[in-house]
Length: 63
Image 1 (cartoon, rainbow, N blue to C red):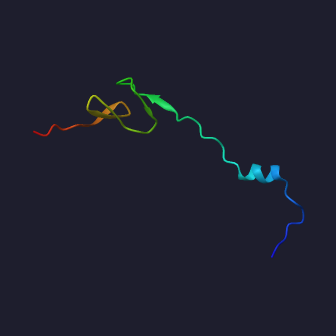
Image 2: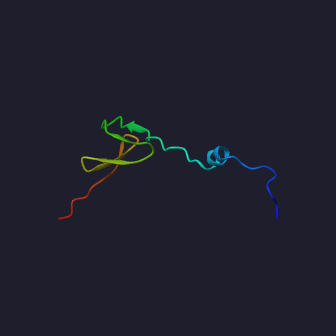
Image 3: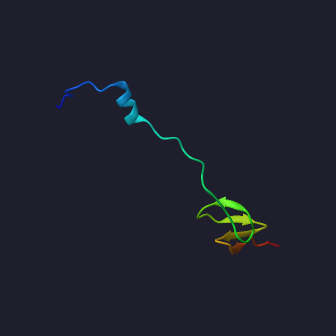
């Protein structure tokens, strides 16, 4: 088995093991409704599903 030739310091070890903090997600404004939503995601506004400023689907009313 391989053995390390030099001791690795705690600082160097911890730098390797760290995880960067998550950043806040980028929010887009829909040009049609003015609603804020996540990029590349459809969003509901007044019972209509919008994607890229266009209506994709409407909620059907079952009688």
